[in-house]
Length: 258
Length: 319
Ligand SMILES: Nc1ncnc2c1ncn2[C@@H]1O[C@H](COP(=O)(O)OP(=O)(O)OP(=O)(O)O)[C@@H](O)[C@H]1O
Ligand SMILES: [Mg+2]
Image 1: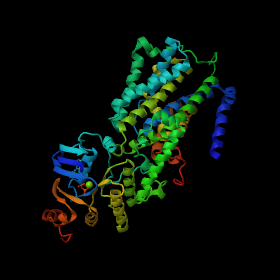
Image 2: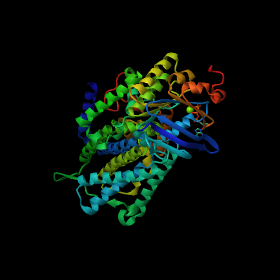
Image 3: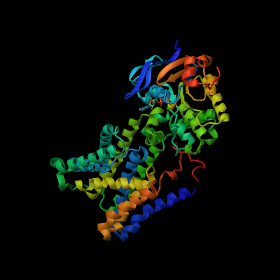
Image 4: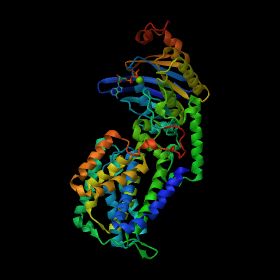
């Protein structure tokens, strides 16, 4: 009975005098799409950074599947099944689209020196299978036909999709998406929404989503958490959030008619 | 395929070269051997700098450790060269591992300075540990390798030996960099935080790069000791480290063929410029600066990469 996949308990992060996160409690439940919203500088990306181990919290506890992971190195958390995309895309621009996905595959990251020197047929078969799997991830985000292009030559929206494919290649169970729709036009956003829903419903990946596009958030989220100045000010279903006076005051302003 | 033909012609030329050169001059045969030694050194350093992106400046120290290990074993223990060669490589590789472990936390300039310091310390040990190394006097009388009862007596034998070693080095390193390992190293070079965020353990691959680079420097060192039959601290100064670094950069970091090209250029040019010896370093320095400005990827940089990291031929792109 593991209802909660990820649990944050009174997590704080301080950068010098600046409190980026202030005693935040948060849970990601099995099977859900949870969105994090909040104004610029609210601490959303910082939240991802402590979940993935880029920063360790100043205080508080992070548990993933009931395991305390506060001090775990980033690469170990990937091994446990947490993967992310970056707000400012981080791709290997001079490498091909396929290679950008390959680097994240577990089997690629465990190849041994002697095995790679000998390159026996068993290894070649294994590599074939890895390439196949990575092509499938590209298929999911719709970039399979661009596998041999350089990542840097892709338009901005596709670079974000490539980041998602790369995260999937780690074999993740919890996917953290940091503003995946930024720089996308309306049609691309619609496609993205479909893909995120597919990942959730078909592949059973828990999705944590940071977005500024309110319409998209309302449409896609099972639940929403609102951050403001590092503090969680609200949490609930889209309709609850839409009607929350605190949220309307702090963030939504007059943009959404409640 | 044209490429195969090209490789065949080069191979035939390299094999026949001593017969042509041997008549003309022993000197150019020596130059070819030096190119071979520095090709191995620069290919090894390329793994550290070009692939793993670790700006290490003390490669001559590994070269020296390999040479001294081989010299001491050959002189004191009467072991066969064919046994000493791999032992020296392994010992040197171990030193690469030892150096790599503490310094991988450092970045950029700091790493450069610390590895430079490491190189100087190693040289000072060669100079000052007189009981073992005989200090500045060096170790003379290193026995020549023997094969099937014949002792290596001329440059031709050494030429063929280094040719074989260069080919093996190229083959092995090429396999390593075109594997998941190479792919991971490149990722670390480009963006270490990203690497960690997709499950790569940066420290493991950085240490691995140091170990591999040092291992091959050990081979070059052991060969050098047997070839010259004398080792002294003079051959392993920091200038030699800088020279190897220049070969990697000039040829194109992240490309093995480039390292061989860089080694060839930087071994041959000083010989050609011998008559203007005072300006030699100046001209080389100028050439490298110009290179950095106008062609920072080197003569033969990564742009010419034809293979996918899994050895598959890349389609279309890059034309
Ligand atoms: N490494 C750091 N050092 C110092 N301050 C930081 C660091 N990272 C983030 N901050 C600060 O913490 C606060 C929260 O930043 P964060 O990036 O989490 O905001 P965000 O909600 O993702 O904003 P945006 O919508 O602009 O992406 C900001 O004030 C930011 O300047
Ligand atoms: Mg952010």
